Length: 131
Length: 131
DNA sequence: ATATTAAAGACTCTTAATATCTATAATATA
DNA sequence: TATATTATAGATATTAAGAGTCTTTAATAT
Ligand code: SF4
Ligand code: SF4
Image 1 (spheres, protein in one colour):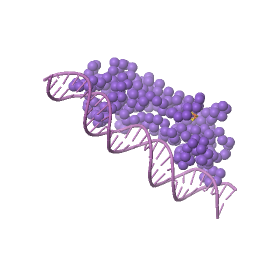
Image 2 (cartoon, rainbow over the protein chains, first blue to last red):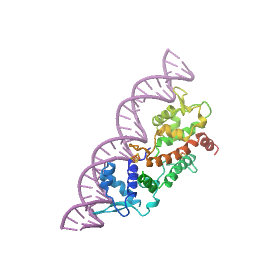
Image 3 (cartoon, each protein chain N blue to C red):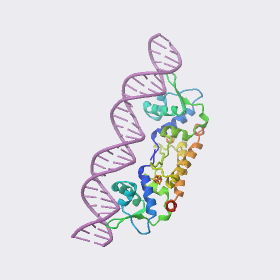
């Protein structure tokens, strides 16, 4: 069980976009080059972020991607959900009523998620910038 | 990103073994039948648990598996580590010094793990038994 | 009209999980 | 001691998901 590489790429892209001047779009070539990725592959990931409403895309010349207007409250969890999906890590196909095992696993997972939800990308971006 | 089915099987097996009378071993056939699994597959998982010291195995007639002597402090996390490995969910190959992203991801993961570490199998087994 | 750029679909490649089969070693007991 | 029983290990096959490429289409700026 691992986070996919896509999550890593998505986080880096998001932080990078956060540091761009307002209203300016960045193309996928630039974003891909920065992380040594193929543009077409990164493009798939960015489309997920777009569909989740975390970034906005504009096609055509001078187009590209920029952080959506909700910029100031995008959390790590938002990005992870967009890329990995928002299902539980532990899922039993049976789902017995009041299952004790699921209870424990789900509660633990919630602890992780609430931490990820409390961490905003903008704060990380700001800190990274000021280094 | 999901827990493997093996983790589910391991947890159920451990809870079942916890409820056995002291000193009695249970064979893999019985454990497999209980969960509708092939014995040879479950066997691989049980070998992992054995190597991690969570259970003890005895080959030969009347052999099988039983909870190890540390029974009373085996946590969910112990089982998960034995089956899934004890590496981090988020691992960046680059490891920049003081990486902010890794910090957040790792801290969140720790929150999950500390919860899993605080939950003991014996408690779940006792609760399940008394239902 | 042209160049640029994102989106989408089909496709391939790689890896990890799932699963089976067989052979071997250890143990109880008759 | 011989036999039945049971875990372990290794080889192998199957499946599913992730990673990555290529090509076509649609949208936009100039
Ligand atoms: S007890 Fe819980 S985890 Fe186990 S089979 Fe039932 S629902 Fe699934
Ligand atoms: S900043 Fe952190 S996550 Fe990003 S490449 Fe460096 S070490 Fe990896």
